[in-house]
Length: 283
Length: 295
Image 1 (cartoon, one colour):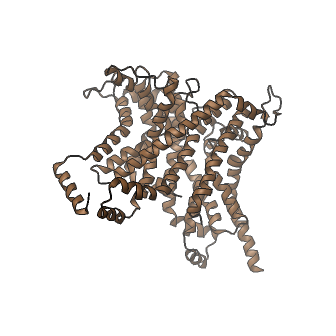
Image 2 (cartoon, rainbow over the protein chains, first blue to last red):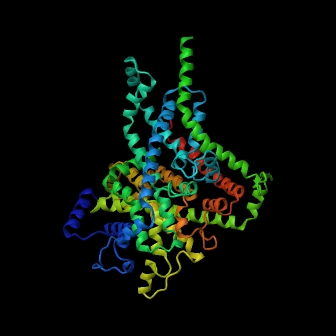
Image 3 (spheres, rainbow over the protein chains, first blue to last red):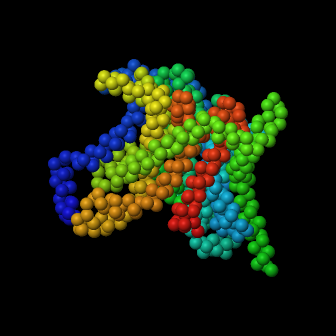
């Protein structure tokens, strides 16, 4: 490793000999360790339960575990609930956070900086930390055991407001003025100038929010108590609690059923997911 | 005068735009925070009696509560066990996939995939590994003639088992931030170092690692928050047991509120969590943000 040419030469030799370096071996070993739990769940779900800890390449494949899981718990209902929950939250977040982000970016509100700091506090005080009081509030509003009850505490997301405010601030005023000359009011300016230009932010925030709420557990567990409103995570948690005594192959199948849509979406759109987490994370 | 009235109209308009968010934040963030503080000063009313104001009595109980101290200590150990390990692994992973590596895309995917799984699903899978007799770990150890420990049932091992699972779940998420930061380091630096004959080891510690410091701090803040906020896996793996060996603060809140129905004591523990989060927030806003730009 003395000069770039020497480095190139050694890499070339290495590639010719096809002898993996120590670093490559370590990277691949770590990768195998990291993906192994998921592969193991796939193995367990597609084989009869006697092959849970017997790795036999000739073991018969079966879908029986999936039919068992599907028949033993109302997964169809859980899917519908999670789908309604996630689309509802993301749609409501887009509306509420767009309006608030726009106000913070462009309107002369007295005490704006203090208000904005107040909003940012919610980046640290999450609904799940306040489960005790949020449960009381949800129950006094008649929201216990409803999908709205699961979602509402997350709608005014400080994170969404913050991201959209930052994006709106980067949009040149000249574009706004041009729209105004053509007779647009504030709402038209927002919808025709700001929102279209913030599309990448919406995509990033939307993907992060979908992943978060598809996977969220504690608050949905607290605020739901029937099949009618439970999302997949809570349904899965109840189904696979050790005391229920459901066999492991069936639990594996149920676990894969619950994670499949998000996992498939991730594998198909890896780049977008990773970019979104990055864009949303770097504040 | 005309300008002033239009200014006033803009103010009103802006306030109206803020209204939905303000109402929701008020209802589900500020009101419950204040109510938590107030409730921690009361004892629950029994048999329909109104709650009784007791001042700081709940806090006195908390200080006497051995379980609370055990849980707080667990949470500290959990943070100390997960955060440095996950950060070091994340950095290692990022360095691996940032270099020239055959099958880089696959390796990166393997590292990142646990991030998109729900904690509940991850816990289910690890349950198969950790289960005492029939679990994969002990079956494999058994073929080597070793009797494995009871990973989740032995109080001296259980918290470590929970920590290992958490590190597996989190490291890939932190990796992407390091990867992005590594890609923004100009390649000229490494070329220059190569010309000077600097070893890769000292290049990493003298150049790369210091340049990654903002990322490390950002990841650290996120990891600290997660250490107090995510307890989903406990519901599957241990339920805080055995004998509270894996109980964490937020899970203890849940137990007090929804299993023991002691809402005011749960509120008192919540105040402790809020204090921890306040410290984290102060570090972020006071120490980190002067370097980043909000405007």
